[in-house]
Image (cartoon, rainbow, N blue to C red):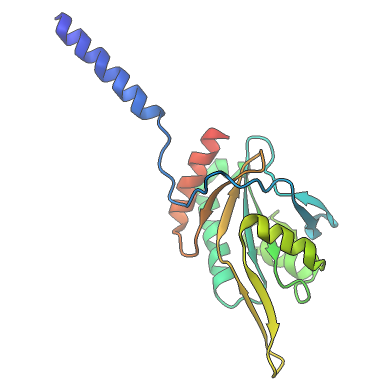
Length: 196
């Protein structure tokens, strides 16, 4: 009987230890965690007020760099974000989205706001025509972007097509590459919210 009690106690401790271990994230985690909370851009969806890359207390901020004329990657990514948020149910009110345009000459404040909020109502639309400010933010996140005009006048835009999760301390916690299933994004957000 004593042996049975000891075995039950060992099993309970082992199960408790396993349950407290953090679940594995589908997205990539950089070590050390990049600090992105020290940079900001104007939030044109809120009258141009300064927006720092830091989630509200106990929340997670999802950040995306793209442009509204993007024919495929940007709308597909934002549709995945919308699906991930829907999958979170009531927890979605603890997650917000901010889209940074890398094509500010064409993405006016109204165009960008309407675009990103058509995917996630209340999302933040971040825009600046200050090249140095935009580059500084992109550098902190590790984002590449380039806008070029061809000889025929066609504008070509290239950019990193990743999503980023930022916590309330301004740390970049997870990076999801393009094509990460929305279910995986939602699962990672649940994990991050548990530790927020």
